Image 1 (cartoon, rainbow, N blue to C red):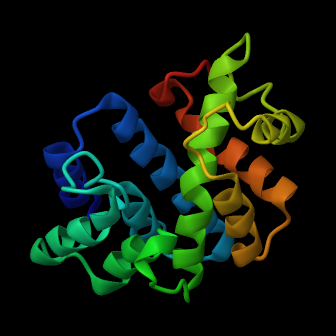
Image 2 (cartoon, helix red, strand yellow; image 1 turned 180 degrees about the horizontal axis):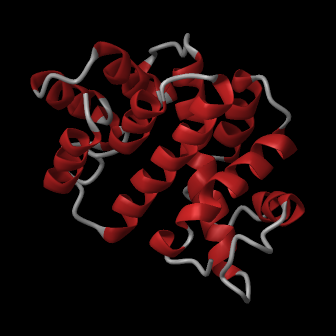
Image 3 (cartoon, helix red, strand yellow; image 1 turned 90 degrees about the vertical axis):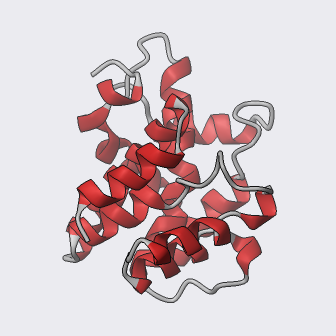
Length: 185
């Protein structure tokens, strides 16, 4: 599977700029974790890139990501990527067994949350976004209210990393694509 094929699926289904930025952010974080684990960056990156591609076209929120998984299968995506996509939501009942599946769950909510924290900073930059700032915003339930704090904590636990280290890892992973996410470099 190559990135161009995955990107074509994203471009066909994900129309909003915010969703495309989210998919790019998760792809980038997944590649960083793949490097950290000595795994296949392309494979992990594709899983991140397509994990939510069906969000805007899915008939119901409950059908996501099962709806998208069927599209991926029809398009010939490898089953390990499809399974990672299916396991990234707790509501599917699909266990997260591989490190790639655990990383996808751990990167999903946190990458968006870190981006949101950086966007409200005066500099709109990841350079001065600190772990303590992210954790402070996690306590404010009104900030990025749709982001599950429980999933962020659970993701770090399942991945077997300290929450502070995981947050710092995501901040660092996102820095090279800051401009593409609408942030200052």
